Image (cartoon, rainbow, N blue to C red; front, side, top):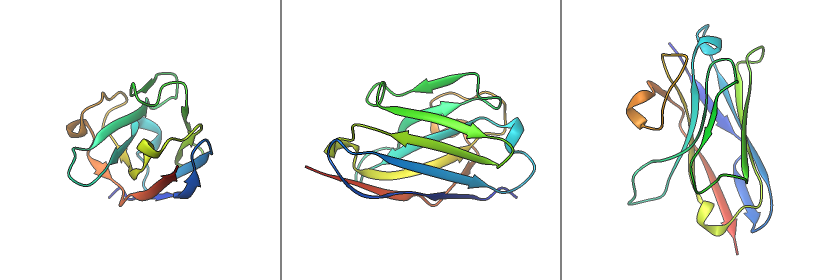
Length: 124
């Protein structure tokens, strides 16, 4: 069974940075695409970024392009999301997700496993 645990969320001023981490259990991490999503109350879960199993293919949602950087360390079973130039509209619960395939797209249904989420709050 895969378990994902996010960390690194918190309160930051606009323009600041945070680095989220997601530690995965199990032996499937290095063969799986990983993704980050975010959600605010009353809205659908939004795709933030994704990375394939090897780290060679990376994708970002339009709202975070040029500001966020996703990376992974397969030796540590961990995926990261470096968030720079944060804006108040980045405020959300951020979720880590793992696919069952090497590549995954932007849809929530392409990811089989989800973490509990970590709150990110950006003050103006």
